Image 1 (cartoon, rainbow, N blue to C red):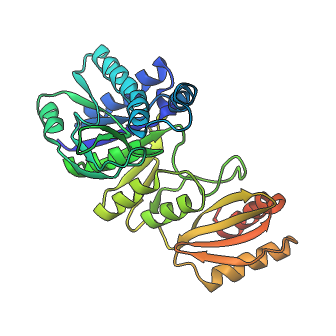
Image 2: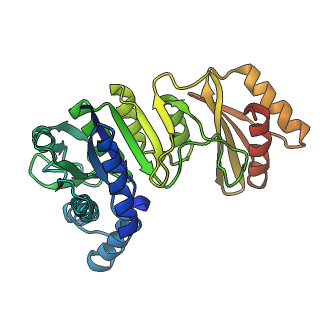
Length: 323
């Protein structure tokens, strides 16, 4: 049976009902003939709560080692509760810390790099018929200290485990159904993208759109790990992140505001002068002077006044994304 990694974000684990829902998705994968490994984030807002507690207790200049030891607790809470939820449904499950799952890192507290994964314990649990539930965001340093992998580090935990186990797929389950052609709250007609390339997701992240942890996507790209971004609350297909992605051209748009100015960006592959001229023509026709255009890998960016960014986003979405 193929192994599947299913990573759950904190909003999917915010209360007992949501944890049970996540457990049901894991069990659903097993009923489909897969061997699931769950990777979990801390419950929603709990990491921020722990940071506030740390500041109140240890001040701003607290020991990095102790800070990581504290923050890792959030994911361990999620892992234990998820394992309990799976056991309550008759499954055999086991919660594992980053160390128990074999995730080895350097000694850079708060933003450690994964150096290797010793997957023997994970393979042992799978062979015994148990569902491993791994606390994401954490690993162990050469000195045996707990380290954390930076904001969104559970994403990195999931992809390194996927590679170590040779998993057939790596799912990211969150409170959204996938990546959209634009932010649906601004552009109601935005639609979910079926397939997108690693490079386009990296461009989105670099331009301020929090899709997934940037290091995790880069790791997946280096090792050819297909990602599936989908909802924790619906079982419909989400967005696949692969090397080739979908068709060339504009895939989606992003928006970023910074003070009095803002930036609207076209994200896609094979973007060039024709796309630049089409975007300028659409903006000019609407009376929006699109300022200096910048180029980045897989992106064309237009600077305008902050008050005009949302209007320009809608205009360019209509110009480039087929209804």
